[in-house]
Amino acid sequence: MTGPYSDAFENFTHSKRELARIDRILKLLREEWYKDPDMRLGQLVSNLAASAGWTGDDVFYVEDDLIEEELKARRRLDDQIRALELGDKIAKQVEDGTLGEDV
Image (cartoon, rainbow, N blue to C red):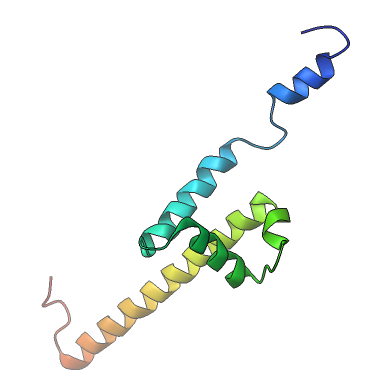
C-alpha cells in the first residue's frame, strides 16, 4: 500500500511482537492447567500471578516473556520435585532390598 496512510497500514497488519510466543506460552499454560483441570482459566492466571508476586494491576502490564519465564520456572520446579520423589522411591527400594523388582 502506498500513500499518506501506508505507515499506519503497515503497523496495523504486522505485529510488533513475536507471534511464535503465543504457541510457546499456550503450550506452557496447557501443561500447567492439566495439573489441575478443574481450575478455571481465571484461577490459573490468578494463581500464576500470585506465585510470581504480581499484585493488583501488575498482570495487565507484565510482558509475555516474564509470564513465559514464570511458567518455565514452575515446570523446572515440578521436574525437581518428581526427581526427588523418584530418588526417595529408589532409596526406599534399596533400603528394602527390592530395587528393580517392580519393573
